[in-house]
Length: 377
Ligand code: T4K
Image 1 (spheres, rainbow, N blue to C red):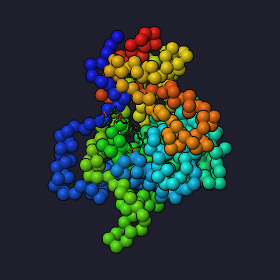
Image 2 (cartoon, rainbow, N blue to C red):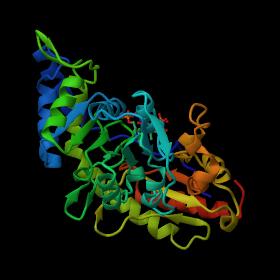
Image 3 (cartoon, protein in one colour):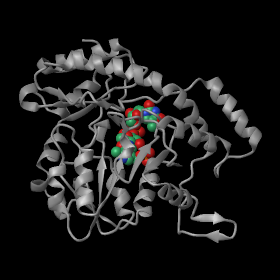
Image 4 (tube, rainbow, N blue to C red):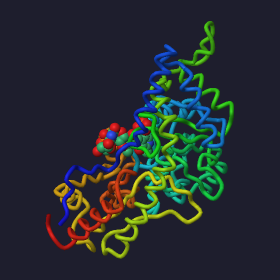
């Protein structure tokens, strides 16, 4: 069976041509300006405004600080209903705001929060729903909006995986009060580290802009007890150049996704979710589920055996956030409340998925998976 010569990781960032980065570095050196909304940051925000088609965008030094800031600027308190099947940053942003996360079970197909289980978790202390477009699968946005409106709750999205996602003609950020994007290098689009929030209102964007600069309005006025969430010029320069490459990356990922689908359809014990046709996908991850009984091996066995072929898949998002030592005793974390999430978390495997992979690489990865169904590594 084919073994990769070098390790193949779950992802690998876009690297723009180094000459272009050097030009940008020269611009930064000449400007003698490294942070605090310099020319690169201004240009980056302008370019993102064009790319996304909205002015209500505030860029940050990373997605976590962006989400923490969004929660803070919406003045959320008490309890916020969220998903346990996500990266640690999602519920941690609530904890940093002295909010108790209330974990809600997920849907078996999209693996996003189950809107039909949200209402039962609402108490007088609930102030918002924080949903995650996990792996770039869209949440049930309309149902969530209906619930939020009915109960007078804020609705925010962790769109760390949702760059460029749309439902029909509607960009995903048009749902809810605000959406956070992560520009970490493991993301389809990145700025080395970075993030952004797109808001429904211009006022919220202005509040975020103030908040991320310590709340400083001008030399004689500090309006809010803010923090330092500013992106720097080097990050912005990278972001500008990666933006030029992102459509090419997306095209290649589309081909790879097609190849994965073609090779893994009808493999007993392997399933994957592809969003409906009206969804423009972010193409952030390619995630399969290993169903132990049918496949004959557990996800963990497959994960371990893939390594012997130099394939380094990831068990995102294991363990569930509700299993973390500091969340496990919450009433909402108990197993009986999260049956689907507890099942899904044992099955998911994020396979290598990035533009420098070839379709032949994907074929080899799929052949190894099929080989492992009947053989041991
Ligand atoms: N919400 C959600 C739903 C998220 O997934 C995330 C971040 C956030 C919020 C927070 O956004 P940020 O504050 O990060 O902007 C990674 C990332 O560190 C994290 O950003 C990301 N989610 C999470 C899903 O993945 P790890 O622990 O898996 O990273 P690491 O270092 O193991 O990298 C994974 C693979 O990527 C490596 O095996 C190789 C490759 N890699 C990584 C880096 C950093 C590269 O090839 N080059 C690189 O520079 O967390």
